[in-house]
Image 1 (cartoon, protein in one colour):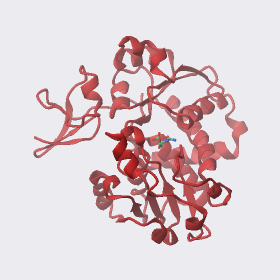
Image 2 (image 1 turned 90 degrees about the horizontal axis):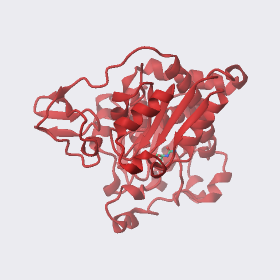
Image 3 (image 1 turned 120 degrees about the vertical axis):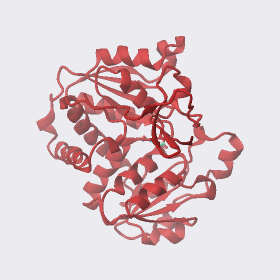
Image 4 (image 1 turned 135 degrees about the vertical axis):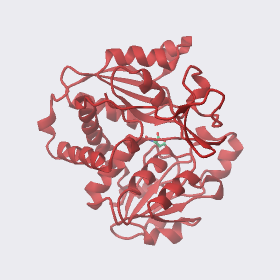
Length: 354
Ligand code: NCD
């Protein structure tokens, strides 16, 4: 059985197949009615969500399947102290596909280790969000007609925004994409993302002005400042409202610019922008349903097995990322990929100097 923890687990040809299937479902929805009849999707949402959770639920219902799960761990046995391993084992035993969102990094991979059905990562802390990336890629395919040769501006909380990290990684695999990161120095995109872009030969630059950058862009990907990932309220307050896209700034953009946002929006896009035909973030949420229908079908039909942990167990080494799942779920193997004197945690990808 296969899981979707990170898009990197699959070749680009697999992503293209899922996106093409999403496009076909969007164009011919009637053909897929009942394709998951008799199947059950389990959803374990340990962290708040509107779009991701409901678009998965809508996807399964539109395919004729059924749903079980929770959206608030406080109302499940998690509140009695049940560990992730047991909850996953039980709910995956009731399901044909399991969708998990969790505040800790690496949680989806941890769940997949014991799951009895395919697991889909619906966001693990600030780490990855592969299904939002598939949504963004279907949106680009439908609205720009391509995934290559694009100048993409990413604006806002580029440090904590998992959707930004996943999307940059994915688009770096297509030719001639150029990235412009618009953020404050405190919320710059992590070094590991820049390393990936460099290793694929992608051009990128880091800038501070949204106004000066907009005229160059084919795509503007706005993000909210992730209040829940800040150490203090003061640090969050200093960052919020630094970048606000309004009608005046948007008017500096090309006529075929498209504005995307994974949502929820807080204050970073004024509401008058919604009326502009270039504002595609609400349409993007609709594409999310079709690409998730494609993904669910692909995962349920695929019977191949996947090896989740490939590295070495280093029992005396601790992951230095405080938000890594290995600290909360202590039974997890301390599994790292070693390269020279660097060990990379197999759950959250943190690199540790040995
Ligand atoms: C994003 C997420 O959860 O990471 N939202 C989403 O999936 N639609 C972005 C965010 O929360 O800011």
